[in-house]
Every structure is written in C-alpha cells, then in structure tokens.
Amino acid sequence: MTNEQARIAEHADKSKVNPWAIGVAVSLAAFMEVLDTSIANVALPHIAGNLGASNDESTWVLTTYLVSNAIVLPISGFLVSWLGRKRFFLTCIVLFTLSSFLCGIAPSLGSLLLFRVMQGAFGGGLQPMAQAILADTFPPAKRGLAFALYGITIVCAPAIGPTIGGWITDNYSWRWIFYINVPVGILAVLLVYQLLQDPPYLSREKNRVGRFDYIGFALLAVGVGALQVALDKGQEDDWFGSHFITALIVVATVGLVSLVIWEWFQKDPIVDVRLFKNFNVASSNLMFFVVGVVLFSSTVLLPQFLQTLMGYTAEAAGMVLSAAAILLLFLMPLVGRLLGRFQARHLLAFGWITLAFGMYLSCNRIDLLISFRGAMWIRVVQYLPVGFLFVPLTAVGYVGLPKEKSNAAAGLMNFMRNMGQSVGTSAVTTLIARRSQYHQSVLAEYSRSPRFDAAAAGLADRLTHVGLGLHFAKQQALARMYRLLIVQAQAISYVEVYWLLAVVSVLMFFLSFLLAKNEPGARGKVAMH
Image (cartoon, rainbow, N blue to C red; front, side, top):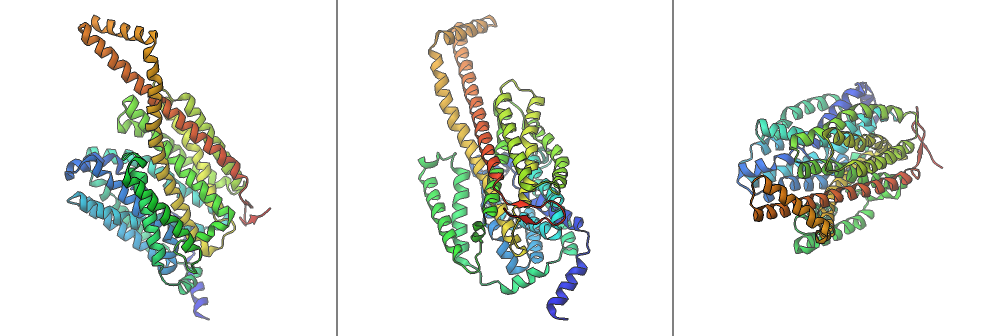
C-alpha cells in the first residue's frame, strides 16, 4: 500500500465521525467570529469613556476589525493549500480567542486597536473554512441542511449581536463582550481538534502549492484596506469633499485593478480570480454581494429609524430585530430540505421576489405612527426571505466546481458578502443623510404658505394657554414646526431607500434564472443547458 493509499484509508476511517458533529463544531467557531462584527457597535460610547478617547476615535474599533478581516477572507483558500485546512482552522480559532482576551484587558485605545486588527485577521479564516468544511463533509444531497446550519450562524449572529452587546455592556462591562469568546473558543478548539481531518485531495494540493505571492498580498492589503477605511469614514468626512477619502478611493481602485491583473497571470494566485470565468461563480458572488448590501442595510435602517425618529432605546430596537432572527432559526432547516427537492435557482428566485415584496411593503407601512408590533412585522417580512437566499446561494456557488476549488470559492463568497455589508451600510447612511437634506429643502418651501402660518399661529396660541409668554410661544411654535419638518424629511428618505432595495432585489430575481441548473436529490450534479 502506497503512502497516498494509506492516507486515503486513514481518512475514510476517521470520516466515520458524525458529520453533524463536525458541522456544529465549525459553525460554533464561525458564529463566534460573525457575532464580533456587530456586538461591539453599541459599546463604542462606553469604550470611548473608559479609555479616554473621543467618540470618533472609538469608531476605529470597528474599522480596524473590518479591514484586517476583509484582507484575509479572499486569501484563505491559498493559506489552506499552504498550511493544511485543519492546521489553518485551529490556528485561526486559537489566535482569535487569544486576541479576544487581549481586547478585553486592553489598557488603552491604541492597544485595543492593535488587538482588534489581530482579532479580525485570525477571524477572517473562520467563515470560509466553516463553509468549505461543510461542503466537503456532506454529500450534495445533504448540503442543503448543512448550509442551513451555517446560514443560521451567519445571518442570525449580526441581528442578535447589538442586543447581546447592549445587555452585557449595561449589566457588566464592555470588556465582557470580548471575554465571552474565550470559553466558546476553547470549546471550538477541542471539538475541531478531535473531529476534523483534512480530506486526501488537500494533501495533494499542499505538495503542489508554490511560493507565497507577496506582491499579490501587498496589492490586496493596500486595495481592500483603503476601500474599507473609505467606506467606513466616507460619510463622516463628506466623501469627495475630503482629500483623505479621495486619496483612499484612488489607492483602492489602483490596488484592486492591479491585483486582478497580477493574479490572473499567476500560476499559484493568492486570490484565484480566474474562478470568475465560470458564469455561475461570478453570478453567485454578485448575489452574495447584494445579499450583504440588503441584509446589513435593512439591519441598519429599521433600528436607526426607531431610535433617531421615534425615541426607542437600543434594547427596544434590538427586540424588534430579534423576533425575525428567531423565526429564521426554524425557516433555515426547512429551506435546506427544500433544496433537495427543488432547483437552487428557483428557490433563489422565490427568495429575491419575496424580499422585493418585503421592501415594497416597508415603503408603504413605515411611518412616524408605527407601533412596536407593526415594526416587528415589517422586520419579519424583510428578514425571512433571506433564508431562501442564503442556503441555496451557498449551494449554487459550488455547482460545477471541482473539490480542489472549494476553499478558494468559499473565501471569495464570504469576501463578497462582507464587502456588500460594508458598501450597504455606508451607502444607506449616506443616502439617508443626503436625501434628508434634499427633502428638508423641499418641505421648507411650504413654510411660505398661509397654511403654515396658520398652523404656527394656532400652535403658539395653544402654548400661550399653558402659561408661555406670547414671544416665547411663537419661538417655541416655530422650533416645533421645524423639528417636525426635519423628522418628516428623514422619514421620506427611509422610504426611498427601501424602494431602492426593492428594485435591486427585482433585478436579482431575473438573474436567478440564468444560473446553472442543478439536479436536486441524490447526486446533486449540474444539469447544464
């Protein structure tokens, strides 16, 4: 028996481990990492106050994590071929857990930012590896349920992150939002070490892998790093009105274009951009980008609307989001089963059209008189269609790909989704601000009308009846009318953004039918047409 045959026999023996045990172990690690992308959001004021920093400076706690995370995501496939998947995955979990502990004990903002860079970098390998391990561990007929488990961790973690972070920060300390990763990380390390084994094809890949592509990595780090900082700080610094943001966008454009050109001609690319020659891979990555945009945009929009315009607390706004996340826990496994009966592209089409309907319904139902229950149901119709998107989209991304490309494909999918989240959050924040200014100027025209004068005079008259002087009553009436104008202008801008998300979802609905067919059932093969 040759060494290769011995390795295959050994893997076959160890692969008798229940695949669901492996699925739970790797999903636990991914959940821990995804939770950290949103759990710190609500703790920023506490972090700033405790470490003697300004609120603007504290936002770098989020930016540094996202930048280092985004750089590692697309190169995770190469790093697996270089180090082996089990070794790479365990290294990421151990160092992510260690850097989480260091974040918790950080004595200053500078040290916290350094540890957040480490945390983001080592966390960057957890999502794509969890996805690739599930793709290799489960046969095509059962991948739907496996990806449903993975989808629960990826989709639900960002939704419940702010609620958990707010509760921990209010009741204990912001440091505990990092400390809670330690026991979870230790458990994940023990489970992964015991259960996971590299498949035989990875051993062959490891022997064939070439040298590390330092030029490609440098272009990736510069391009993605500049883009992430620009997206995070753009609205704050007035985008192209700032020389800093303009320079970052130029650097990002040059770096990313150069990266694609350089990697296209490399024998062992650190980012396998040639995968995009496959129409199915390119389309599924585009859809993952849009899922990231819509998912995070809607997650930002509703709580922001409730808190800024309706006076909800962070905890109350979080409760509105949590109801939909809980329902999604039950929907994901159902979609996983449907994937064994229906073509993935048909489930995707259903998901996109129902998401478009959910955004259209949001346009018509969201207003300044909405109740807590009404807001909760809006979130449900916005969020449940994501279950019909994430699971089949994860599966369709592997249709027609050899197993040797699964790690690289997983890295690209997760990278595109994360970039979509960054772009979506930045875009809706900018659109709300700019469209609110526009509608404020339009509504201000009505202040010259007799109806406005009559309304202001009537309000001033009522204020004088409760004891205010006539002059002060007129000032208060105008101030209240102006406040009403600002709130109404902002509310209209939210409606417009939901309209935009609905249109984008309809476009993705039509793209769904262009994806490659798959044969639902036992073989899960491609049925090309």
